[in-house]
Structures are given as C-alpha cells and as structure tokens.
Amino acid sequence: MSDALEFVLAYGYAVLFAFVLAEQVGLPVPAVPVLLTVGGLAGSGRLSIPVALAVALAASLPADLIWYELGRRRGVGVLGILCRVSLEPDSCVRRTENLFLRYGRGVLLFAKFVPGLSTMAPPLAGIVRIQRGPFLGLDSAAALIWSGAWLALGYAFSDALDLVAAVASRLGSWVLLMAGGALAIYVLVKYVQRRRFYRSLRTARIEPEELRRRLDLNDNSLVVIDTRSAIDVDAVPQTIPGALWIPAEAISTHRQDIPSDREVVVYCS
Image (cartoon, rainbow, N blue to C red; front, side):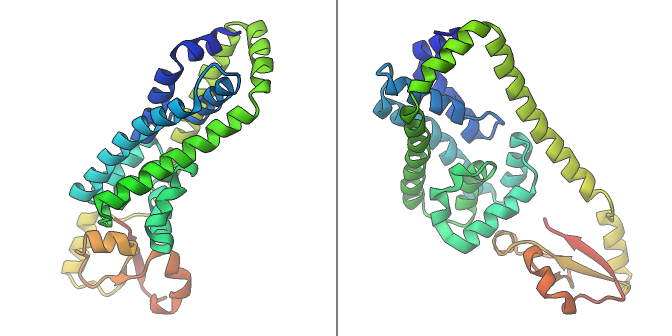
C-alpha cells in the first residue's frame, strides 16, 4: 500500500473532515478525491460509510451555517468576500442568484455538486431570508446526498483502489509530488480565471466620481442601467437616481428600452 493510502487509512476521518470543511469554507481545495478514496477503503472493509457520512455532515454543516448567518446579517457584501476567498469569478454569484430565482430553496439540494455554487448557496439562502430551520434541514440533506454519492462511487470501484495503490507504491514519493502539483494547478487555474474576469471588466469603465459629476450636471448624453438581479435589488433597494433596472439576463429582450443615441453606463453592484 502506498504511503498516501496508509496515511488516509490511519487518519481517514480526520482528513475527510479537513477537506470537506476547507471546501465548504470556500477555499479552493477539492474534497471529492478524498470522498472517493474513503469510499474505496470502506468497500474493502477498512473504513465505515455511516461514520464517513457523519464526518462529512459534521464538517459541512457548521461552515454552511456560518455563511448563512453572515448572509442573513451582512447582506450581499458577504458574496464579494466569498468570491475572493474561493477564487471564483463574480459571475458565479449571478448564476447562483438566477438558480434561486428559478428553483427557490430547492437549489440547496443540488448546489454542492456544482463547483462555485456550493459555497455561494448558503449565504444567498440567508440573504433571501430562508428560515433557519428549513435551511438546516435542506443543507443537511444536501450534504448527505453529495457526500453519499461520491462515497458510493468510491465504494463501487473499491477493487480499483488496490490497483491504484500498487501503481502508487511503485511510483513512491512521486505520487505526493503529482498530487501536490495537481492541487497547485487547480488553484492556479482558478486564479487565472479570476484575473481574466477582472481584466474583462477593465476594458471600459467610468469612475464613480466622474459618473456622479455628470449626473449632477444633468448630462443627458448618458443613460444608467442597473443590471442587478431581483435578489440584489430586494436586499439593497438603493439605486442611482434615474437608472433603468434591466437584469443582465434580460438585456437582450429589452434592447428597445435602451437609447441607441446615448452613452450607456452599466452597473451590477
């Protein structure tokens, strides 16, 4: 057995707890490989699926509850913090908001399977004022469904774990180097995606002070469009005076409402 598998076997539940907690906090650390490994070890009788489910739930629920309470008490500003911590582009916030608008609280049941949405869903549940009791019930069910699915997949392919262990044993310390390299590449990809997103926003912009000056002068050569979602508007109803509210996803169907002979200023937060 490889050193890596021996380590997971010796400290499997602690490793599982740490990785699930890190992912739910928002850190760019994938927990799925650990869930698959623990499931495989359970398939060979060396670990327990019920205990692993309990550990995953114990790691997931507190982090989700903290983000829920922060969303409930601090509002949409929490999402910006979470985006920076998780290295997810801010567009993932909008995707989660749209899912909430379309499916309601039921989105909590499958959000954990979608990268980026998993950590955005709990604070949004707090922002839209889902009651604490229903949130805890849905979030607990989601954690069990998510972890159970990956543990079951690892369990089903537990025979392959010995083959992987044999290959890893021959590779020796190279396994740890490859695992570390894969994690580093994963974080780097997230970081590059976020930087590219920021660069795309800098292509054309106006400073808030300049916009305010022109509005104070009643500059009729521009029109301001508020592209926030209904969730954001409900949470922070304040808007720029005279701005048109057209959610970003509805702009294509409201082109006739946007003057073509004026400079357009768009904002989303």
